[in-house]
View 1 (spheres, rainbow, N blue to C red):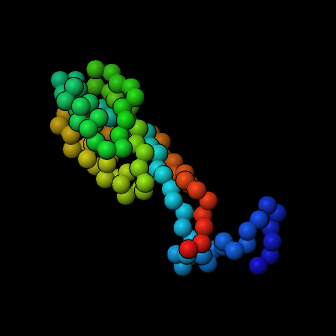
View 2: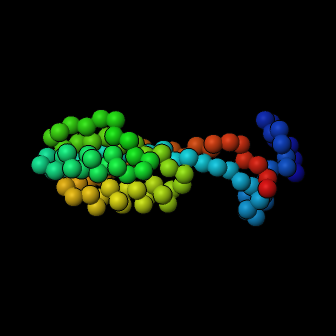
Length: 109
């Protein structure tokens, strides 16, 4: 395999990922805007705060909440969004931002 500028470890390559030998732990960070009916705001906010991996850093009693998620994988993120949408009084949930970050460097197992 040819060495490219900036390559430092040639033992980690495409084949390692394809065969599942490369392990990289990720964390998924997402921000959402949740709209709810104003009459259900307090109940919806309390239900959001009770969910694991969920933080509500800002809200407006007229029905808008900013929600942050930090989960280990995209399936958990989608499951959390689905559970938010089932909270009584929630009108809509909009994904505003999503990023997957490596917790550590990829390594061979």
